[in-house]
Amino acid sequence: MSEAANCEKTKGTGIVLQPTEGQGYWQPIWANGYSIVKLSPKNAGPDNFAMGVQVIAPGGYVREHSHTPNQEILFCFAGKGTMIVDGVPQPFVPGTTVYVAPGVKHKIINDGLDELSK
Image (cartoon, rainbow, N blue to C red):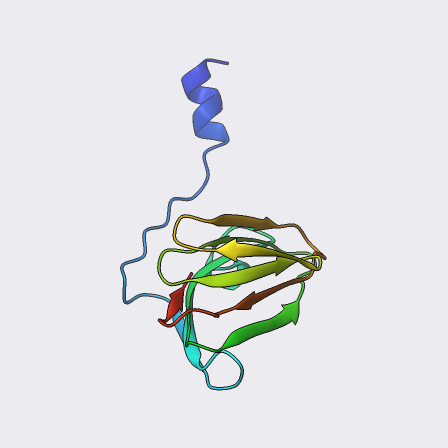
């Protein structure tokens, strides 16, 4: 089988979402912000993986939690906070990327003066 034919056989789905597309949720408790789920298994995204945008107000937080069987990638693009992964605090500032495997506990705290966006 040629390389092109093999690539076509294993080709996956490409998805493009514009800024206003996705399922939005207001989060008044703890985070005092909102999230928009962009990709998840429920909307034709990859299995065991979800991705979205979340805004956390100053002083807000996302309570400690984990996901099974899902994995998560978090990327900070605005604000300043603390990411706690398995009990270890780390700075969560613009450009920080965090990978959380299934079952790994994590918490996000906005301890800055502005909204924290991830």
